[in-house]
Image (tube, rainbow, N blue to C red):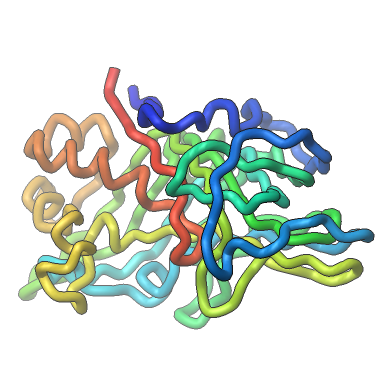
Amino acid sequence: MIKIKRIARMAMTAALPTLLLACGAQTTTEEPTETGSLEGEVAGSSTASDGVGELTIRANGEDFVRQGFVTKDGWQIDFDHVYVTLTDITAFQADPPFDAEAGGTPKAIETVRIAETMTVDLAAGDESAEPILVQSIEAPAGRYNAFSWQMVPAPAGPAAGQTIWLEGTAAKAGETISFALKLDPDLAFVCGDFVGDERKGILEAAEQADLEATFHFDHLFGDGEAPPEDDINTGALGFDPLAAIADGNTLDIDMATLESELDPENYQLLMEILPSLGHVGEGHCEETKLVSQ
C-alpha cells in the first residue's frame, strides 16, 4: 500500500480539508492561516471583490498527452487514455499570496471547494482539444491565487481502483508495445498562482475565470526534444525500464507488480517522480513524498 509522507518542512495535512465523496461545492470565508510570500508579478493584491462570478476548473495533460511525444530514450508515446481521479478540489483567495516552494498553507480570505470525486481523461479529444473541463461553480469575485487538490483511486468507472491510468502505445526501432500503467498512490498538491502565458484565476463579478490543475508527464518519461543533460531528462524514468518488463508486445501492469519487477532504483525513482506531476501551468506545488508500508 502507498501513502503520503509529508516532507518535514511541510504541513499539508492542516491545509487540506477532510476527503468528501458527496457531490457539491462550498464557499467559505476563513480566518488567516500560515502562509508564504512571493516576489514580482505574483505578489499582487489578493483582496476579495464584491459580487460573484463563475469559476471553471480544468485539468490539463498538455501537448504531451494530447499530441504524443518522444521520451528521453527514444520511444514515441501516443496515449489512448490518461485517467486521473481528483477530489477535494479547493481554490483560495490568499492574502498574502501563497508560495508553494516556501511551504506552509494558504492564508485564505475566501475558499471555494468541490468535494465531489471525479475521474477525467486528460487524453480526451483531438490534438487541439482544450484542457478537460472538471466543473464550473459559482464563486465570490476576486483573485484565486492558490489551488489544491487530492488524487485518490477511482471508486468506479474505467479506471476503478487506480489513481492514474496511462494507456496507449510506445514505438521504437520497429517495436511497438501496447501499455496500460495502473498507479494507485494517494497524492495531494497545494499550489500557488498559475504561471503561464496569461494569468488565470482572476474572477470579476458576473464574469468567468479558469483555474487549472496541470500534469507534467514529461517528468515521468523525459523529453526527447530536450538535451540529454537537461534536468527533465536526468530526473526522468523514461520508457526503457518499462519496455524491459513487458510481456512481448504488451505491458499491462499495476503498482504492486512494478515494485516487484522493476529494478529497485528505478522503482524508487518512480516513487520520487509521482509527487512532482502536479503543477498550475509552470507554477510549482508543494511536494509530497511517498513511502511503502
